[in-house]
Amino acid sequence: MAEEQEREFWRWMETNWVNPELNWRNARYITVGIDVGSVSSQAVVMTDGEIFAYGNMRTGSNSPNSATNALKFALEKTDLTAEKINYLIGTGYGRVNVPMADRTVTEIACHARGANFIYGPEVRTVLDVGGQDIKVIRCDDKGKVTNFLMNDKCAAGTGRGMEVFSDLLSVPIGDVGERSFAIDREPPPVSSTCVVYAKSEATGLLRKGWKTNEVLAAYCAAMAERIFSLMERVGVEPEFAITGGLAKNRGVIDRLKKKVGLEPMKTKWDTQIAGAVGAALFGYALCQKGKGRK
Image 1 (tube, one colour):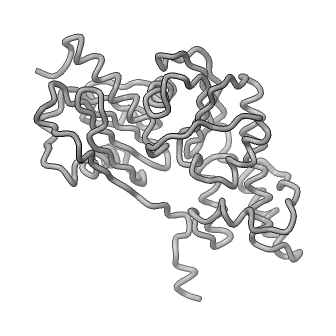
Image 2: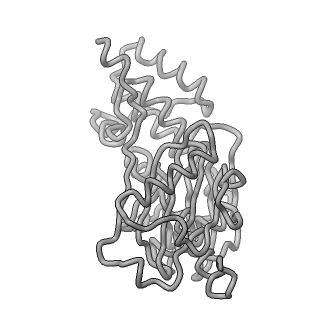
């Protein structure tokens, strides 16, 4: 029992990856995007506009350290050193605290450009569910933003909200989606949109005899409703893609897609790296214009 109480159920898996088909020494330009979010940080290293390596890890309490650690994590399995980088762009919640950045670009622009890369130029609507905000972004075939709407007033419906519930119910965050469907019938969503009150409501439901999976289903449904209400305001145009960590939670996404009436696009890439990919691509474009480091 003591071990279960000490376990951090919210802790998701950190990952880094290197493309075995690319040799950075053959690249003309090496560009990096670092996306420091409120919950997670990603660093993507690109060689001539192709993904060479990336790291995806938890954001610490110090944004500059998080940016540095994410880059080290991305380069960990390579022999590439930071001195070889031609351009580095910071983005995300903590973009102003990326100490090695040549410039910063907003996460909205970066997620649109990154989604265009990891999903394909057909994408027209990007839903980014971050750690503490939700963004609905419309873009063209070049990944340029044409319209967007953002809600950042509350952690409800975000990655942080899901982490809180994972810990509350002692369910590993990677299991939440599947377990939310291991129910006899779909319960009504929790009524509160505030994480604090939703926690109280969930605790009350457990005391009334609700099973853990039923409470998970009710909260996933509430998150899907909250996200959909924002999407309705900006409009959803096919093709539709999702970025951010919540894209990996089918408990929310499968319920959301029924409301939207569209099947989200598929990608082979980690959905959390989209912002950093977009940042690295902006850096590559600047290098092609002769603005890279000398």
